[in-house]
Amino acid sequence: MAITTILRRSISSLSPLAVVRHTVERRNHHQYYSALFTALYQYCSSSSTLSHKPYPRPFASTLLLHFYSSFSSSSSSAEKETSNADDPLVHAVKSNIKSVEESADHEAKLEELSDGFPFKIVDKPGKEYILLRRVYQGELIKARVFLLDLNGKNHKCNDFRTFPMTVRVLKENGTSLRFRCKVFVNEITIRLLQVKNSETSSEDPHSIHAYKGPDFKEMNVNLRNAIHKYLEIRGIKPSIYNFLHEYAWKKKNEERLYWLKNFKNFVES
Image 1: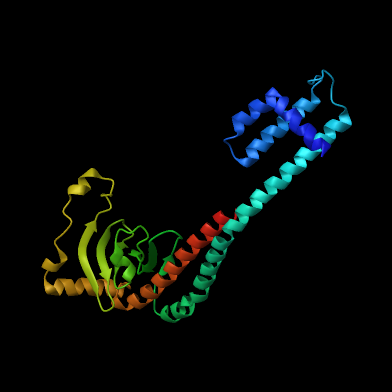
Image 2: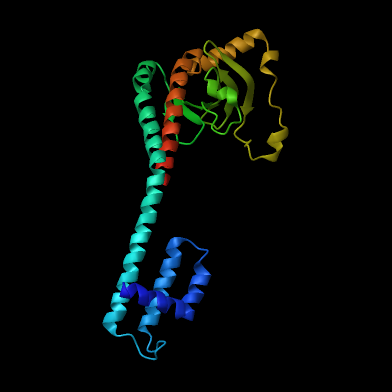
């Protein structure tokens, strides 16, 4: 009780402490008491006080210890209150993570559907697409398949009824064919077919104005059928739809789980 009375009188009579309080009173609880504690320590360590005599060392130590104990208790209570306030959110996020993990039963189905799927898959977290690669008779076949719409630009992509795809068939000499397709449950539609020479790159300004070929629908029926057969032999055929459909659900769950875990880590940190 005596220490509290002395502390109260000392703080009210000290202009340095008054300045500190005025400066930090609008800041948060922790900053205020930290600055006040520093000022009090400097005051007790001073060689001159209001009575022109230094505080005895034991008294100064007791005064500082009393203040620090009050500060620590108050600070811990504030941190505990904040932590308790976040508990419902952490619980909700963990519950969502558990729910997504328990519903992720796609691996078994994919293993079953992968029989006859000739491509190697390259899948990176956070990407809307997967990459398919294979080598066929010295040709490199690369395909980019868009499975998700993570940015809200194409809502039709998330209904998993069709998957936009770009396919490139590359020869060893650098020439290539490029197809723009869509994969449906019963068919592959082709919108565009381009022929790329090894001398022409996408960075070449003249390639922007180069002829990109006729509209696929305007081609002769026999030619269209032959092109579809050409892609089918290389693995681009309607039967890959079922695998892509299941993989899209798997990827959607993985992206959701990845986001939830990042969110949980932020809230808990």
